Amino acid sequence: MDRGSKPAVLVTGGAGYIGAHTAKALHEQGYFPVVYDSLSSGFREAVGWGAFVHGDIRDAGALAEAIDAHGVKAVIHFAGLIEVGRSVVKPDLFWEHNVAGTTTLLSTMRERGVNRLVFSSSAAVYGQGGRGPLESIPEDAPKAPASPYGDTKLACEWMIEAQCRAYGLTAVALRYFNAAGADPSGLIGEAHEPETHLIPLAIAAALGDGKPLTVFGDDFDTPDGTCLRDYIHVCDLATAHVAALRADLPAGAFEAVNVGTGQGASVFEVVEAVGRAAGRPVPHSIGARRAGDPPSLVADPARARALLNWTPVCSSLEQIVVDALRWERNPAYGAGVRGRRAVEIENTTV
Ligand code: UFG
Image (cartoon, rainbow, N blue to C red; front, side, top):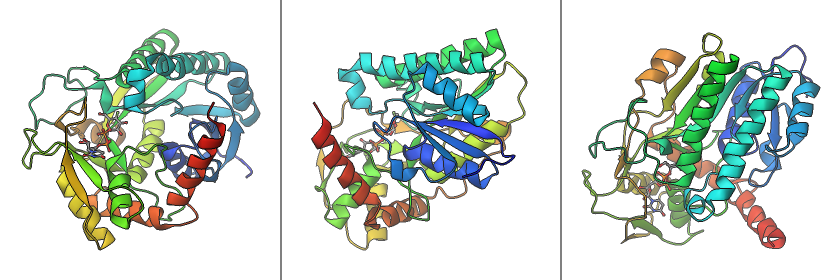
């Protein structure tokens, strides 16, 4: 695809779930996305807009080359490891990929004169943080990550903020709540391997493609006893990235912004919504609580509206589930991509 006069934006991790949706949103809003991805967990099939560069986030030379070759003006940085459970057993890997990788990216950006960044952070920076069970979370809430994954996201935020002050970088860290759903085209969607997230697992259970769902605890201090989460449609997340890129901020500014709806949905509500959309109930049983799961994680989304002029437009639970289901049912993508990936991993793991 020819860049023409479009501003080029490097999207590290752009072959992953949120990265691919953001690359599409960038394309739709007049940018030229340059996807930079090692394909260690992303999918080549998910790269359909702009250019693709196969590279590792820790490789300064390859990053510099991609920036120079495409005249990159800004970076949206998703590349990194995301599985919370794995971070507990392999914390060193998370610090190497997420923190050292971000250090390499920041110094390369500085060297090449790129001074605008949107960073993929997470509600994981908050952890339990001493709030009441149903309180929504503003950005200045106490930070108490419950996993090394959350630690690395918070460490990156600190590092980026310091470099904004020191070097005039302008950056927005977006703290996502629960990303869910898929592009309405059915061409891109969620495909993690292994899959641990509630909505794809509930869909697989309803369609008979997976095991019955285990609900992790029904004795939390919440209205129906199951955990509350703030599910945000991945297409709304994608537009939040474009809004963060465009926000009118002075040189040297650093802003951390929640990306959520402000509404919590319980695990039982999700199970019901998936059952309605699939036209068959989700087979499930109640199991033990999962270690590290806070009872409730719901964003206070006021800052995103004020600073980025962004509000979600497609994040009702119904819409999220209908779009996720369309993707899962597309045999060429959805479960098909996940199946191919599982085979690849089986063949290459040493
Ligand atoms: N759940 C089940 N059964 C399952 C899977 C999940 O009951 O088989 C429940 C969980 O206990 C939780 C809710 O469904 O209450 C959502 O769980 P997910 O695994 O889908 O998502 P998390 O809230 O655990 O994780 C999300 C992001 C992470 C981020 C974390 C921050 O996916 O990247 O929020 O806490 F780190």
